[in-house]
Image (cartoon, rainbow, N blue to C red):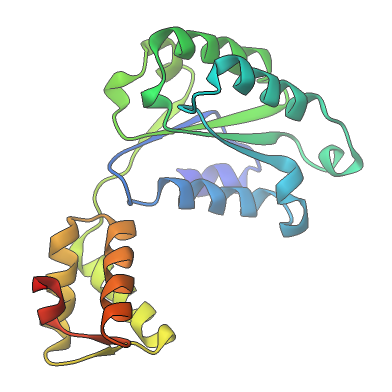
Length: 201
């Protein structure tokens, strides 16, 4: 679905939801790189944490300033992109205000909302976005990626490589961010050597 939008050079407002570490933010940044030249991304993409204590008024002002700023770079593209993370942590009042912000700037801005629990979002926000669910990553996919990272980083896996990687992946239940943090911790504690015993310490 996303590839079709990219081919058409346009996207609707998006709502990415699912467990942590499943690639929601990585996916939207990949989308941004498909729309904008690398040198223009900082001017065309605004990334905010919607649950910050700053409140919806600050978020609204930042979006307003970002949306209204005109430049030669902005004129090259159809729209700017606003990424709002942790929208499920906003109060219902703040979400209602966010809905109005989305409506106000929809002519030249696309919003990508990211959350873990979509049930916490009010229907008015959900209905304005295309919902895409991210599921926990499959163990085979995680093992393949971790193996690739170990090779590129020069990490050595002692003993049964497959068993060690499966133990690492099973601990994290499809959360790739947690897998990589655990891998890094094990490597730092053991001079770049990864063993199955590291997970028991």
